[in-house]
Image (cartoon, rainbow, N blue to C red; front, side):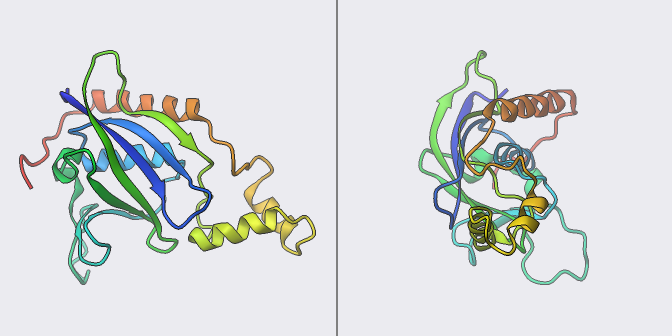
Length: 204
């Protein structure tokens, strides 16, 4: 068990009003598991590729899924299963970029709000706060989502009925169910506790 907990703020970039979450995770969580936490907390379906970037988008250090394609070009991301959150974002104020879906380009700024002493009564991972619903998958990124909301808000728009049918009547961009998020995060924690433990690298 990790002796410290990272309090993270996760915010989708290039969207107003802000869509974000605040979560608690073990400081030594592997990056592949942090990916699962972000997916659940935000509300994504984990149907696209992802990467973490520490530093600038173009020149930063990248971490992601292991790639076995011998024909892949360009610099490869480092294997995320070999690294922990504490190694790439050790302190309060540390930041990284979580990039989901390389077509729609959902960029999440992940910042460390605090590093706390772990206590037995604090479950992790755990969602402390949530603002607004996650955009639907494959809606065209921030620009496409803004256009979708504009169409949904205008019953006279020629695409209104088609978009409403595509997204479903139950979608409310202002609503997020934090209790459901925490139930899913608790399920993740139970699954990890049953799994054989892998060791991340001791240093970067």
